[in-house]
Length: 72
Image (tube, rainbow, N blue to C red; front, side, top):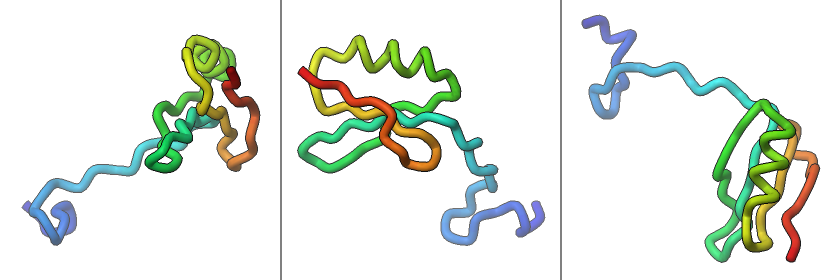
């Protein structure tokens, strides 16, 4: 196998980075912000956000702009 396709640190095969998504759902919990879901479907993201039973979730665009939050 060519070394061009092997990571230096672990001998694992190279994998391309994941495609960027238009929207990110973020949990702002005690451990700090954590991305829990990424999608290109705005309505699906808003529906997912609506089904959460507790506050602390945010919907952000790919540029980091806050689009919606889950409140009590």
